[in-house]
Length: 571
Image (cartoon, rainbow, N blue to C red; front, top):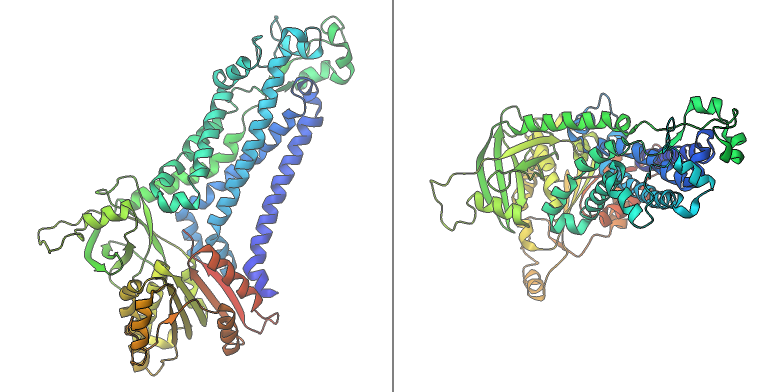
């Protein structure tokens, strides 16, 4: 139970608190507009659609306050790396900020939909209230207010134009309608371009359309400037009691007890909700701009198999921790695009490096800009300029806080653990006695044999280092090949009896298929019955869900027993 609380409890508490605040705001504002005295006359022409429009608007403001916070990466990276202000459990919540970001985005989409649909009903009722056939009704009397002297209007539709022309006029001639159309279209583009298929196949589309959030927020702030949602003024309520005068609407202005009611619009408040996160975001962008202007020197470009290149770089004042990542921009490829890459170097090295797999237009452009497509070396080749923003904190920073660690990488997801394993190697070379980490279980799942080649050298160095220091049991690694053909299987079987693996050259033989995670967790739990085991994954969501459940299922209810703590890399 204690491990469940550590892993999931705080997340559930945060989500429940967020949902409760959304519910409180929705219900509170719904009652204000559905039952409030100031809006008795407003409801006569708006109906309940007024409350259904205003309640989600309050929730929309609240969620817009929250959604910008997770993208302030420098702030979160600072908090995540500061053990003084953030315990391990809190830092794990910061690692999950993008998941919460998605949840808030869907909540914004939901409230925007309710708000928009409710306003469509509002506009229809307001246009109909000005129609000729409504003469003599209370809706017509309320709608005609403002046409005479010393009157303020309630119905912002001032012309008697029937639907649908009247509705279109409201949408495109009023500031509220125009901004509503713009921010709705912006939100639709942002959400549809954020799907996994678009992000992975057309990253540029996702990147550019996601910046429409600037348009969305500007439109949202000025959306209420026109003050079209109106209610009776406080002063008018003292002179004109709507509960007593509503049945005497034909005598307003003639009956001294029922003077003509006066109305005013609500002051826009969205800016109060978003000014703080917008200020943080602007500061964040300024910091990132300043950091990106620092001079970066590419000291070495290494071409690895499986269409992977390694960039080794230096930058003044650059400090990193294991597993962190940076954003990279190459002006020769694109002046606007920034892409995240995990650092594969160790903090102990005098350079920092990233491994880039060539899978899209931007990486292909960088590949060519670095001259990696040339068949012959050209000494005069000039390496492109690179801008770096970062490093940013990730879950892998906590790996040395555990006595036992399970590192699980899938495909190119092995990159954070390259940094971890390199750092382990350096620490062992210098002073292994200071290392709290006593055992590493490393799992690498990959579909193609070529992907193993660039990482095998590091594992061979570690393997040799541990044997030389009589601690071969420190690192237990399992490499799984999840895809092969018949000819490869034949070659593997012919070389099975060799001392080293035919694929990697390591003493540990490559395994075929996928791990039996249930058995792996049980074996590790039995071997480390009183330890806290850090489980670190950089891989797909499906694998994350499996490992997260197994961490909970295989953790002891006894505080003195084994506890698996799940950590996942997020970008």
